[in-house]
Length: 583
Image 1 (cartoon, rainbow, N blue to C red):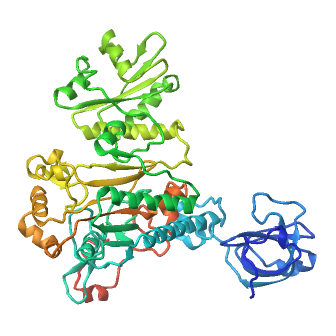
Image 2: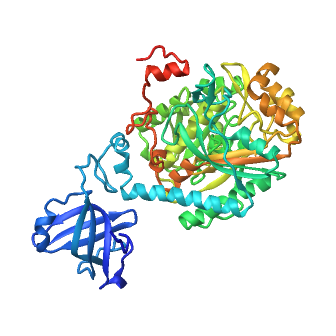
């Protein structure tokens, strides 16, 4: 084998050259006197033409056989403008079968009829598909661009351990039993958070890592139990400087990977503004349909659902679906109501604005003046569809309307899916309250620094204490985020106290880390980006599994290697582990 070119390389200027190509048979077409084969490798396809002298030898050649082709580049009489190599073909002079292949259980082409589970079972074949290879190569371009950018900004690539101490706060840990220390366990890292902060204590000032992380949580289209994040930390930098580093990295990779120029600085929204306008802290800003706060407008309306919410300190919000009233039947509105109910809303109220009157089940509760004020507040005109959610809980109102907004944005094609809208969401709440456990939890993590002016609110007014934290959002997906970290030991103690930690629980979970903060900790902060999610969006996919070489399915199993599996009793005995309730 002496390959002279790859299968995406040859062009019209190569006509007349003697070449040798290697690759897989993507397609074989027998036209009687002539046989055509599309030869595929990771670079593309080249058409090979064989005359009748090869008939006997070609009979055994099937799809996915690997061939070594020797021949001459000739101009195609019928060119294919959809193929980069479509102006030429190879007139075969000789070939050799390098290896054979069984009949594949999936079609190895961009368009395949295989279900995802079957594709994952034969992932090595699925990854031969050009679209999948392009996804993986796009992911590589992203990581290469990131490394180049951070290397050029004086960051140091440092690895942190995979076998760590368990810290039960947050998602569930994956535990790894120790053979040497029976009955004790390592935990796989949910992120390198504590280690990267200690690297700042160590004086490295600028660290990064393309880090593998593990969280034992339910899966969905944009989440995996093992994932990759771009982890960055730096000392002696303000929040604006950290954000500038982050968006500079985004600007470079968008140019390198997509050829798109991103204007800086990126837009910023406060968390409160994002919730008020979009109902979600990761808003898709490619389209409007913004939420309208209607508490004051409907305060005197004698509609029991609104009245009950407002009398109990709740909220009424609405969105105006411009011009869509004629297109939404009661049946279609009922589907939107069902969507709202999945987010704990009790229902969805609605009105349709006509040429001379407003119609809908709640229209009778408004007098003329109240209706006029409502239409003005919502900028409503003829043919507009007005949707409302009310509840005692702010989160329920926001969650339900945000879900409806995103659903309508996609259903009504209100945005160009090929565009990329980045923004920062800043000034997050420091804490969030859990009704079940009756306590506050850290919105991000216990080491997030509060805004300087809100430090005293940690104990006295945790609900209104803001964190010096920031998330970066793309097209309605949280790409990642970060914060300034607490570096003052007294402030860290107050944060633990506000979160309800006892000294015993602090020592047990974080003692080793807290000890490190007492030896001259610099002001520091950073961010982390989800590499898989970023690659998914840049590839135009709606599943994170399309950009991971060997992902898990929604049941957290690998259909290809069948992990997880039971292990032998001997292995368990060596670890001092007994499995109970095993089915």
